[in-house]
Length: 87
Image (cartoon, rainbow, N blue to C red; front, side):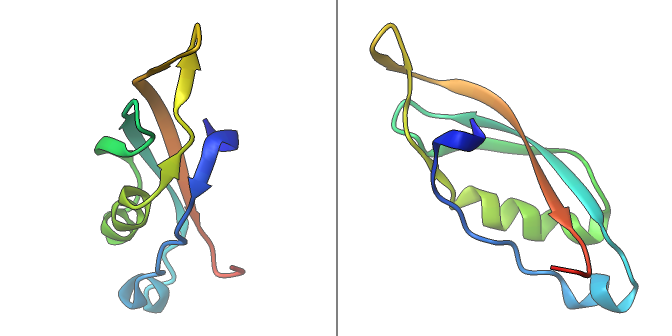
């Protein structure tokens, strides 16, 4: 689904995580509606200090509707949000 993203907000690196030198990936499970909006989102894994920022950013993402036989359909996907000091 990564190629279907229309709107993607970059997560804010939490100051407390930066101060503690915490980096890594937050893995999220998402259900994308027929309209391309995030319908539900849950954390699969990732450092506790980074989770809220990842969820907040991804909730605003929008996708092109996934078409199955020409009809928009709901899709489940995994999204990985990476936090690193280099960017």
